Amino acid sequence: MRYLLGVDIGSFSSKGVLLDETGAIVATAQRRHEMRVPGPGLAEHDAEADWWSGFRALSRTLLADSGVVPGRIAAIGCSGIGSCMLPVDDAGRPLRPAVLYGVDTRARQEILDLDAELGEAAIFARCGNALTTQSVGPKIRWLERHEPEVYARTARIATCSTYLNHRLTGRWVVDHYTAACFTPCYDLRGRRWDPEMTRAICPPAWLPELAWSSDVIGTVTAAAAAETGLAAGTPVVAGTVDAASEALSVGVSRPGDLMIMYGTTVFFIQIVPSVQVDPRYWAGPSLFPDTWSVMGGLATSGALTHWWRSKIFDLPDSEDVFADLATAAGQSPPGARGLIVLPFFSGERTPVNDPTARGMVFGLTLAHTRADLYRATIEGIGHAVRHNLDTFAEARRLEAVYAVGGGAQNPLWMQAVSDITGVSQRVRRHTTGAALGSAMLAGIGLGLIARTDIDRMNPVVRTIEPEGANQALYDRDHDIYLDLYARTKPHMRSLWDASPAKR
Image (cartoon, rainbow, N blue to C red; front, side):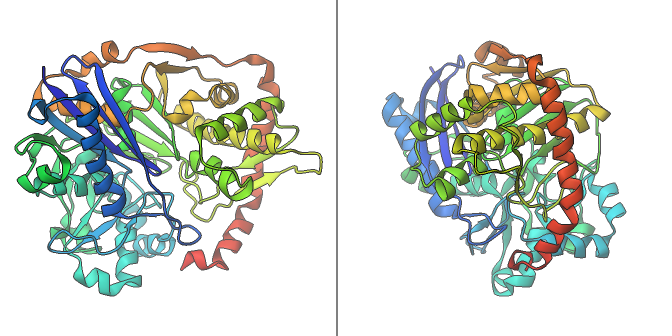
């Protein structure tokens, strides 16, 4: 029997899974870490302490718990939080904490400057994506402007999977799906780095080599083997970002399939048959040469429930606490007794792409309770999901929607989203599957698993159908939700302009 190792680095924890070659899960492991928030609009990870130490701990735990001999592992796949910006020196050492994905909004001014220098239309025509807080390019420009001594010592820019691949194999590689987030450096239709656009940001040599997610990019070095307990010479595939790996794990592979990933943020991926660009969303190649994707995402979801738990309710971080909060929220009626939350607590990504957006709890009275606040937060995320799905549906048909991530285990959250959006959500047996998807990518890379095997390996076990009883209430609240943002947007921007977060 041969085995496949998958590891995923998330915002607040890392997870690992060991599959056998039939696709059965042999062992799982998890390791928690922190997402550092050193200031408003900032989000960072320590690449060594959070990423590589997480991988080392998970690989050793999985080997010990399963009893699998390292030499029986056929291949390794890694995924991680997407579109991070990590500068490293010529020895591959991180020069500062990694600047995270769209939840970090520090580069708003750099977005405006690059749009002015390169031209918004020219960027969109070449990259198929507008510059947003999700883009890596403005964050590299921010580094040059605000930390010139770090920029001067930089030899490469890495994202999470790139850094892990380097620690394992010695090579600097990024998959095409992730590379599309490096706007304005990636030529979407040419599926290559664009040297002209890149030179406006950094030397082209700083960018990793390009590969497809299931390509074998190298093997585990002797040094990496000593640190991880793996066998030297074990093949490693290029991997991808967590959301794309999670989508693969639940079989989102056919045109029209759409994934809603409920994690620290909510992320959407829809498979499309050809290049489709929309300035409100992100476009890119999918994981394999014959597919394309359209993507979107909220700035907060699980991060917001963590914020309520830790900063406002002052409760410990445990599954029991979150279960108690969900139970309490279930005692609050649909509509949370007149509360509406705009969940823009770290700006907002799609479809508004507004880093200046601010969070709001509207309709508060002295009669409201913790349960009402928590339910309103869940429903506010549901309204943000509806805003995205309605906008997606303007351009393309939704054939099947799959719910994944930790939030897919929360019945109240799932039902609220289906009721607010009017969309059925399919749930597969395994729903926290970015690490699972990474192991699958490793198996696909070695020919041990076919993409068509995933329906068998991870079958649909339930479907959440919308309940019509609250449709009128949620339709009214959704109109208010949209109007609140439209009316307060100028004031949000004024607050941003007066805040240290813009600098």
